Length: 293
Image (cartoon, rainbow, N blue to C red; front, side, top):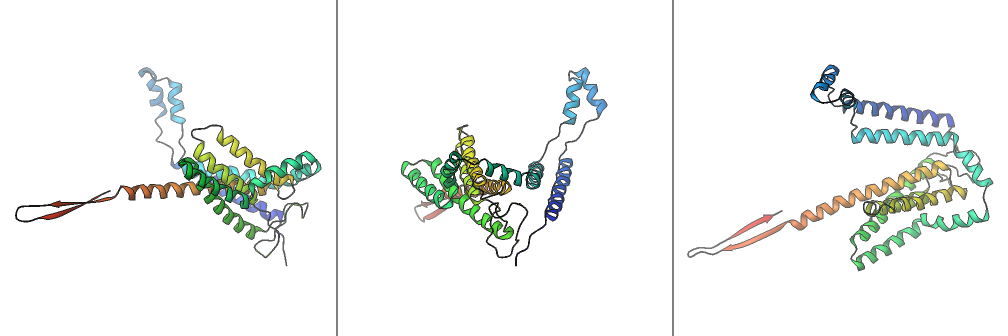
């Protein structure tokens, strides 16, 4: 027997989460503030060549720690997602379905396969093989990250789908119906196509982005089109696509972290050498062993 979570409960939960992380962010910012100089001392520096206005600006400057920045981003993202859930899902779904055309259907059918795990994983494997043949280390890394992030995102999206069991827009006109962790055929949240597309896009952008500025906009633009195609096809709500994008992005960043850590350990092992040197003598001999790392 299925049950639907009420919209009010979801809103209250989202509000409490946003409030909690906002308070945590403010606390972290307060902890990382540098020591503040005395105001009178700041203005006394005018005679020493330091403008008074510059001293006041320097006094008010704050430095956020990575944890505080992450908390701020989390609060902002949660707020945007909650606002979209409350006011954006249904209007966007109604608008897209009332403006579908043969041209938009054709464009959607072109970009939609770029989010299929069954297509992108073999493609990444073939590209990795090409990188090995060409001895292109960047291509090898990009495709290894793509494969790893696709696998990670597949596991995460599968778990979340089985926890939420959200109804697709093709099944209901209201976006707040969930079956929860009970057995159900409804698996709308998050969008697996979008997660796969953003996992590959983030992997490619991570490897090639520092040297080629056009790569990240192109990669993320294609991934965004995949997400829009899922909304266009009435397969997902807007918030499903947003959640899928976050899952794909974080999966790729996690895969990159594991790759760099493993690569560093491999280099350390390669640098370790055991040097065995014979030491002959007239009356006696010996052997010395030196471990270099």
